[in-house]
Length: 261
Image 1 (cartoon, rainbow, N blue to C red):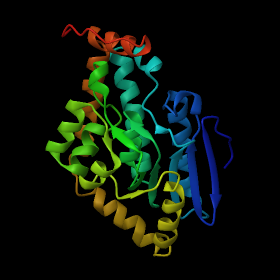
Image 2 (image 1 turned 90 degrees about the vertical axis):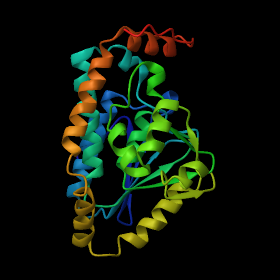
Image 3 (image 1 turned 120 degrees about the horizontal axis):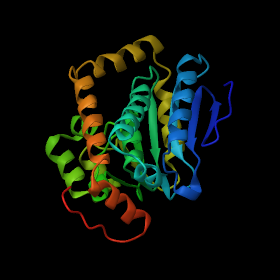
Image 4 (image 1 turned 45 degrees about the vertical axis):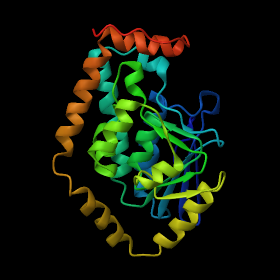
């Protein structure tokens, strides 16, 4: 790889690349710089014949990625919010369209943008202490990195609305029971389990694997319009008083007072 990312750690061993979100002081929250670096890393991994599969994880066991950077969200308005949503969607779609299997190894919290990152991966392995959720409504927003589109396709409309409207994270066993994660393992074992799983998967024909991933994605013909609608609505909400109040309340560690405007 020709550059050294600042928010990610990347290594490749035995044809399996591990991409580690590395902002432990911010609970591995996703910011604009990290999205840029994820884009660059996955573009490079796509073209690297020495890589057969990818594990995405976070530094430590407290958080896979505890959401988007709320300080950045607080600065967004309608137009910038739509651009930010479209940028996040593009990165997640690049990960999802990677022609090599990508497994999210989830330790601790995967919330908001972190959950959307896990959804963009092809498979998910969670520790027993993991928590997954989309709490954006509590900020006066909606999931904006593809969560409103991927989650219902993965677990069904009713359960997706339950998670989005309720906002409370689900634990690993619940996530497994509704099909949100594929495997549940002991804390600290997600990366090892993911690597072992990939070792088995990447023995198969690479061309057939890439084609299978493309074929599964082709089952959703209205994907582009759904993502456009999500970005438009996210941008609309970024221009509201409620979004400014919700993000300010989070940063100030108080309860928000929403006024429906």
